[in-house]
Image (cartoon, rainbow, N blue to C red; front, top):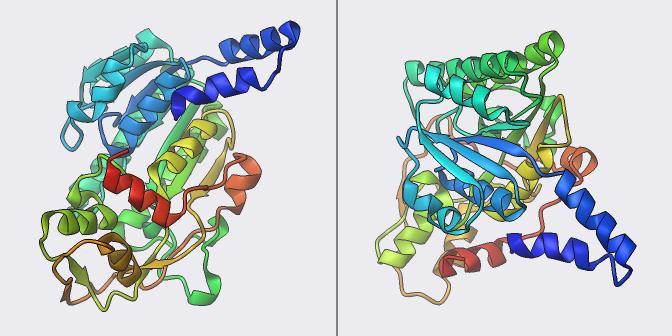
Length: 333
């Protein structure tokens, strides 16, 4: 899919040699050096695939605490300009690498850990943001793109306020407070050091390569594939905004050149209940019924984010229907 996009843009120019040459020149001039921190993770590995397919030079920094080299197998076999560095992003070696590579864009996809963590672990995420911004300041990196959990940034929105908009931040728990603080930190570095940023508030991203513990869709799909029971907390009526990984990666790529100085939602604006998700995933397969567990005290009841700002500032809109995305996940595409 990714490799076709460059060819399609050139072919769209038609048979006029001068127009074709102009398109090729624009494509070549837009190639960049990019550092992806967390590039061996679920979303990161898909982003690396896309960047390489477009011809960019990519350096991955990952400590492999949650990511894996296996996720980068396709990227390593693609023949693109890829270097993988097994490093802690807060280390002096990572700082030196950013200085040596002089990237135009740094993506940081590993700032706020998913799920329940201790306060020191969340504090490490904020420290990583500060360390990365300092490295970018010293080495004159012009753009930083980060991902943050939308579900932690909008509190418990009422049904009437959904889908949530970027101006309605109400951090939920320590995870949400840290996410908001990272946005404030990015804003400070933009104002004081002219480092542009785009912060993407990601809805529930799903797709191939996601570990069962990595998200609700992956957990339910794993249960269906293995014939085990899926545990759904609460009554299953709670809703999530499900966005396919290819759509999310497209937003990330566009954020490398657009949306500077903004927090931008990446989601569909549509709600899918966990009950409906289970029904779609188990369709056509003999699987065990889901097991209900008591809801967590702070669990979101209903949630979706508005993609309007992304449409305006990133020229991005989601295109993969949930049923289509689940079919592709099942196929491993």
